[in-house]
Image (cartoon, rainbow, N blue to C red; front, side, top):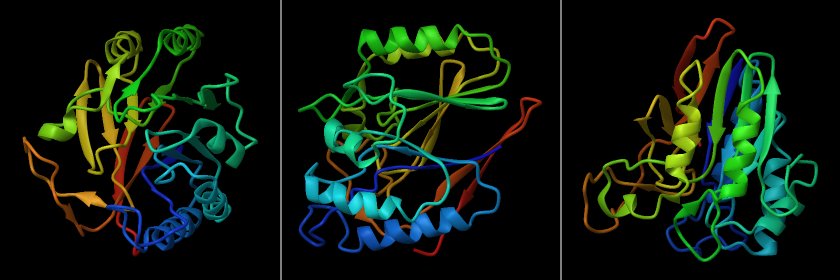
Length: 256
């Protein structure tokens, strides 16, 4: 199976006025959708939040149009810049398991993905509250022999980036780790939020963080202040997951 992971599109309907977001963020997002759609035999795209910049209805109208250019099946969860109701309305065909929170399960052959909602309104950091943890525990208890992936916006562990490490997953990370540590194969956690690509070990699981098409922070480890933005080449990860437990990750640098 081939799975691509992207995050933090920060779509806006007012280019050039959305803070750190690049004026060409929407154009780059459209180009990314075209690149993903053209990738050979891609089975799924996982989008881990901050789909828009200011959570306004007009932005979700643009987002819906951008996503219409993606011809590959996708999962999508909210980030701290999102509005749950507006995002749900933007993708009304998503099989979310809760009337309010935007989480759900997806499975194809030897791969299952649990898309979680870590949005905590009014906070930059994220939370996985007990009802969602309980749901995940029930899902994980079902017999399954294959790869388990969890997708959410906020990283469950620090990335060594100083100030940016403060508002990550501030509630539920320990519970998440405890649940995933019971898996036979090491679980994979897909996230975003920090606008830098990185990989980390979290208990027995591996964390893969995606960067952003809208802006990227400089690699300033341990910085006490917010790092400056940089124009490094954008990349996204493609995970190859086979039925023998093999897991290989490649990085594509599309021309946006």
